[in-house]
Length: 304
Ligand SMILES: [Mn+2]
Image (cartoon, rainbow, N blue to C red; front, side, top):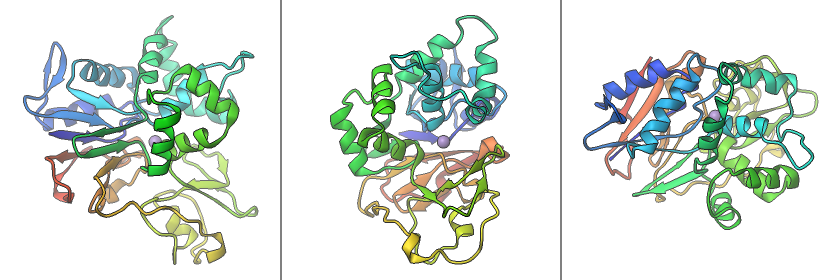
């Protein structure tokens, strides 16, 4: 059975503490459990103090069959930052905001010449989504239409250079589908409203929970957990947009990304967010899954 582990963002110590707590043993082939496998929901890089050590632990587990992993939006960003288009221009602009976001990762990569190449290669090998033994895993949002579209357009289900160059150039349906799975839905604020993200950069959109309806929510409530100063009045219905409902009888989905802190875990009987916001002073979360279709909050394990 599977242990689904949330966003790590370079916190290798918390990861090792979690693996030990779950009964994985350090061996020559990395962490191994006698009867279970780990599944990582992505976002290994950026922010934390030991990004390469985090990657080493996860990569070794994946390579030796002790774990699966999917890509997060931070892996996507790192890949686009270091991948150039046909004209030699990086797929992700090297502006202040993007340079700030990648800072820790870049610092660790630059400690030694040639260090980043194998890590980038591994990130390009990560599946965008995973369906396995009655489970679905994606970094941010399981949207069936987006999954079906990507299965057709990108059957290898990896973020190859060719795939990234194509979607970044076209900025079309395929790009939108990938963004939906790795970043989820974003709410675009009216022109006169601006917020700051956790890095202090101004934004006019923010992530919203795809498993909840917008009806009756305030701007403040919708921007859950963020330190944004947003009005507490109810969002006018003309600003709602439709988010497809994930059916209650569909396969359980595990995802990270939302930095839910104390709210992490089972958000619907078949939906579980395992990101308890380790990167921003929260904890690392894992759901221990034993095949159940109705998820149980008691099966969430947390470490500081
Ligand atoms: Mn994320």
